Image (tube, rainbow, N blue to C red; front, top):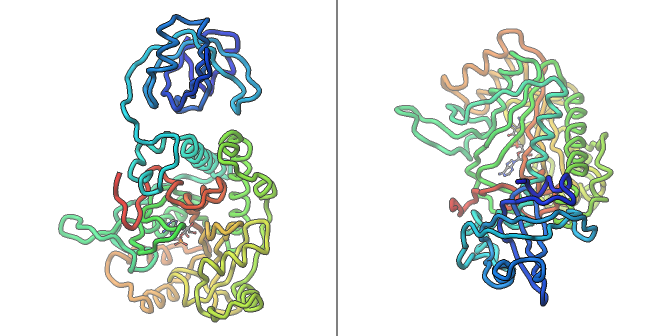
Length: 431
Ligand code: 4AD
C-alpha cells in the first residue's frame, strides 16, 4: 500500500511503501538508520541486517547517497522518541535515482552558499518547517476572512499608478505606455470594498527599496483587507483578532515544525486579542525617556526605536496617530488634530518589527483632491480613485500584513530571506 509520511499514523502494524528522498543516514554495526523525507514530513527508516536481503542492507549501509530518491517498503511501528512518533522498519528499498555529490551536506555551510543553492536548500528540515508554517498562515488567513464574510478580490500586478509613493517603483513598458509592478493592491481594494463591502487580497508586492536589512525583501507577499463602513478603531480590533487567529492556528497545527525550529512557544501562547495601543506622541516621549535623542516629532521610527517600544510589551503593539506628513496621501486626518492621521503600524514582539501598516482612508472628495495636489499626483492613472469619492463615498479602512515578516516572527527566524521560497533581495535574482 502506498502512503505518505504524514499519513503513517493510520498504518501502524501494516506494510506500506513510501516514495522518499534520503535526507541523511548513519549506521551502527548491523543496523542502518535512514532519515527519509517525502515533502509531507521526515521519518526514520530502520534497516536491520538480519531482516533483509544482503543487497538491501548493503545498499542502505554503503551505497545510498544523500538525496537519492527511493521507494521504501516496510512496517510502520510506533516510536515515542521521534518527533513524528513513528518509524518504518524497512523490508525493501528500490533505488529510483542516485544523487551524486549533493552539495548541501549535513555540515555547516555559509549563508551565501545556501542562498545560491536555494532550490536545494528548501529540502532541509529547517526550511521545510518554515515553509509549512508559512503555508499554515496562508491557510488560516483564508479561513479567518471567509468566516468573517470577506470576499477575496485580486488586484492587478501591473498598474499605471503608484500606491505608496513614487520612489520605490519598478518600472516596465506596457506596450507604448509606462507601467509599474504593484507596490500594494490597496487602491484597487478600496474600489472592491465599495462593490463587495469587506474584501481581502493576497498577492505579490514589489518595492525597489535599496534597503539591505533583515526585514526587507524586494518582492514580498501582502494580505490586504479593506472594509467599507469601518472606522479606524474597529479596524484595529479586526487586526488583533486576525493576528491572534493565525498565531493560534500555527500553535495548533504546526507543533512539529515549531519544535524543529526550537521556537520558544511560551512567547506565542499569550498572543491573544486585545493588543496594547500607544500613540506616536506617547511612543516618542517613551523613547526620549529611554535616552533616544536621534528622533524628533515628525521623524519616522527606525528599527531600534520600534524594538525599544516593542520590548515593553509581551504582545504586538499598535503605534497609532502618526504625523500626517510622514504617511501616505490617502490617510484620514484625525478630526481632533489634523496634524496626525488615523493610522496604525503593528509592531511584533521580540524585535521582529512592523508586520502591519493600515489606516482609515480619506472619504471626502475635496480633501482627497487637495492631497493629490500636495503629493503631485496627476494624470489619468489616478482619476478612477477620485471617482470612488464621488459616488456613494463611505468611511472605510484597511491594512496590509507583510507575510514574510509575520512568518519570521511566528517561526522565530532571524532574517526574512528564509521565509519566502525564492527570495528577491537587493543583490539576488538567482535562483
Ligand atoms: O506599511 P506598508 O507599506 O502599507 C501598505 O502598502 C498599505 N497600502 C497597505 C494597506 O493599507 N492595504 O506595508 C505593509 C506591510 C508592512 O507592515 C510590512 O509587514 C510589509 O508590508 N512590508 C515589507 N515586507 C518585506 N519587505 C519589504 N520591503 C516590505 N515593505 C513592507
